[in-house]
Image (spheres, rainbow, N blue to C red):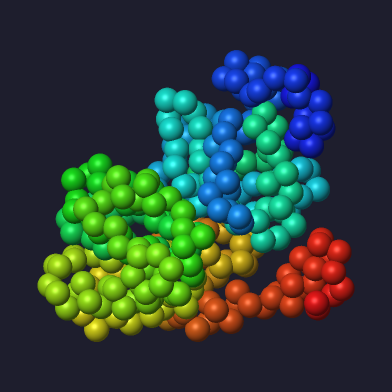
Length: 310
């Protein structure tokens, strides 16, 4: 099997299954580039990918991210490090296939190499001193919340997770989350799985029940994080949010990822991505994140062969 073939070419010509030996051969053939060693579809639009990146795995901490380019002409896309294995030298990312670059990434298969995979970037999450936490994840944001929960669990903290999804068919990482927390509360907007309602409803009920959280960590859609912070601010519970604004270089040079925190400009790529949620200007962040929404819509439509704006 020729590992220099594209994923589609291999699908057409493969005569034997992928084995650990083939993966080792592929890493060697790719001459130190970032070889995909595992790939799993978590739902119809979300994929988990484990990538050989020994130097990044050696230094990675929860809360940090990487920036990838599929090829030398590709755009730079930031993704949070969902997990890492220092012994294996691998980094795990979880991504949604929503734009050109993530769809191109998803065409790659085990044995293929990603052209660029830079990291770890950003500041690691500051989890010291947390003893009783509630992690609130929304949708694919649960992939970002998982490594922080895992780290807290390993540090001996008592952790609950509230994971919210639109419906049962897009639930991800249920077993993984359940393994690293005391209580996993699943909510769905339509009631098709777990409890019907929003994560803020469940969080409010747990706070009112006196669960005694000393910290809440919220990761997901910006509007979700905004309203989680409203709930926790009223209860005087410190809250950490992980922000994902528009980002280009990831090293603080371009200023594209600037956010306003406590009335001051911060760069999510170097000052974050974690911030005090009670000090973030969420309305400004939502406005900035939507600047290119029309262009993104047209871009996706061209990819699928539809008319612009369709």
